[in-house]
Image 1 (tube, helix red, strand yellow):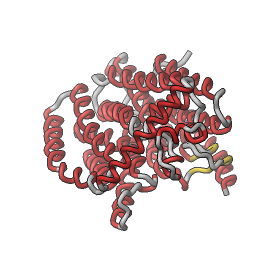
Image 2 (cartoon, one colour):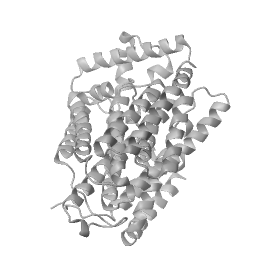
Image 3 (cartoon, one colour):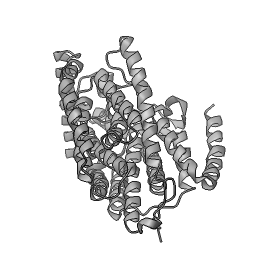
Image 4 (tube, helix red, strand yellow):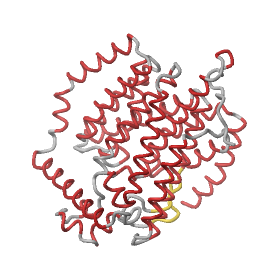
Length: 442
């Protein structure tokens, strides 16, 4: 069956690229489909021609419908000039992968990791081009993400009502779903602040609240509140209006009223369970510290779990001897990437975040309309993501890397378009759905 799916994608991709090239307005629809499909790629829209039962986040060469749509967009849209700092940062990250691969126990998982990273890079480039060329593309992407989180919220309600105390929707775990929800809720809240797409935006934010409260993830709940505050401050830097002040004040009142719900959500887990969870996380971080001290250049991409167990680091750090703890990477993506890719990889990751955030921050005050407000939301999302991954390892999963690529691409694409528009006389600026004039690569 998987080969039939792959064959179908091989036929679909060039056909979709030709269709989009001749019908540019449907690039917007492709962005919407990407936003929805990311959440439901497994098991509906993906296959792995080669799959290993490997104790790491990446377990094979996966191919998905999202990849096909990304390639179709790339083949049908003009290129966008990327910030040189972002190119340099990504190069440093790749260098970290290359250097650390010499210490890897198995090279095939390194290849799995590189393949997944390459797919995320393709999606990043596709979203950057689409959002730069089509004014409605960022709205479509945010709309797709909003529809997906609405479906996830319904599933979470159903799972919770069925007795599941930690519902994770289609993604299986509340921590994963909680982190992914930021990508939908914060851009939606930015639109709500400015008064655009109010019904869909309000519904998306409400569904994000449901996911956070019923899931019960402490990081998700706390960072949802911080994300709303961040989006508000960034939005006011973009352009202060009376409506934004009123919505921000209403959100603050609702947050205060929701404190009992937040306490109830967190306290559904017993004190002993919370203490055990914190102790396990501390032990994993200690194991990662020892591994980094012994291997400052990294142990190889997707190798952490194997090295932690075979190298005795998990034993010496006191990580409990059970499948869940011993088969999970350290619950901190910065420690995880440093352990696997060394300090070179960590420098690359931090530089990538810095480059994207700097690009977004320097463009916040440009332009008007829903696209510029969405830039606010996606910049806030990237900021919160940079904090949230310090509590989770799932940043290395395909779903999170896809969503990260979408957020990064939206920031770079919208920023490129807004900057291009500031250099063009107002009478010559393109209308909605038309391609914005963009600097081309030499």
